[in-house]
Amino acid sequence: MDQLFKGLDDIYNEIVDIRRHLHQHPELSFEEVNTANYIAAYHEKLGHKVRKRVGGNGVLAYLEGDKPGPTVAVRADFDALPIHEQTDVPFKSVNEGVMHACGHDGHTATLLGLAKVLNGMKSEIEGTVVFLHQHAEELPPGGAIAMIEDGCLDGVDVIFGTHLQAQMPLGEIGYRTGPLQAAPDRFDITIQGKGGHGAAPHETKDSIVIGGQLIGNLQQIVSRKVDPLESAVVSVCAFEAKNPYNVIADTATLTGTVRTFKEEIRNFIEKEIERVVKGTCIVSDATYDYKYMRGYPTTVNHKEETEFVAKLAHSVPGVESVKETPPIMGGEDFSYYLEKVKGTLFFTGAKNPDWEQAYPHHHPKFDIDERSLLIAAKTLGVATLQYMKNSAKTLSSQQVTK
Image 1 (cartoon, one colour):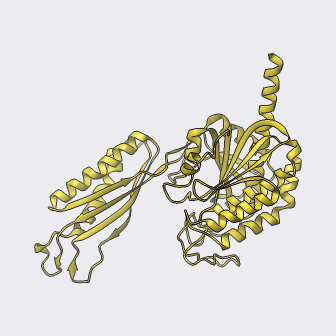
Image 2 (tube, helix red, strand yellow):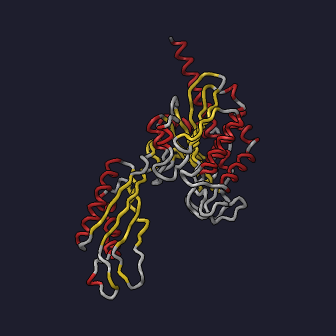
């Protein structure tokens, strides 16, 4: 492990440079052609076997150790968001309206740095490392499911991943067994009323008034229909009915999200939203159109692998605390991998202790303390090497027993 840590320390500046390059040249989900080529070229230079265009823009790179052992996948996502960056960093996005506002540039830099160091330790590696670079995490249906269908997990025994957390203190590792992140769903509602002159509302079916009533009614689903000991969110995030100042709109559209952990609650809310929409529109003699789109499944970490990483994290230089983190309502398509193979996703703190304010993920002023990249790489590296070592011991023990 000392060799791993020293190797990562030695290339820390390179890891930062990679992160800044990616940050300056972000690409949206399903459009990450240049980023994918950059990643593939980096691995090819290291001599790794590389698969391009996996499930779309995904990239797989394989490092085969000189000793036999399990196959460990380590995942990083690399897509950006449709956000106009408002930071003043010198490596600010040059792509108008596109920004790495969730740390995926850091995830990718972390994995590439780890790949370079592990490549230099090939003689000590007991098994195969799969560097799984995933596109399109931010936009359902996401890149994970397509990469799985294209064979990214073939032969994989375990998968590890981390997500940089800008509001978690630098030096902290957050882990959780079981449900970690919620299932993120979307709904679209169109209310069809009857427009008219603003001076004669009695001759209309005011879609704006109906929409306003609907927003209030929808909030009662969680507050009055879901057990308060359970977790659920129904949020209306967009309400549009644009018209001249003196014209009552005939149509209004509402878009929002539902977040749940349990499938039975997810099913209930999907049906309940339509029941509430239907009832609200009946009262006002309006019609509606309702679409519910399911996002990723709940991210559920495996117990043994989660506790394994949490225990190892204490030995990683730079880690000051290892804490069990509460589940969060954000979604993550790492969930698809965990449905297929055992593994865990953990959080790496990235909040600079000297910053007065740490902006949240998906904010135009989002940023990370780049020292978190080193901690993330070391933790993923330790998990990979120690898992291989433990597997080798287990295999050796079984052979002796036989």
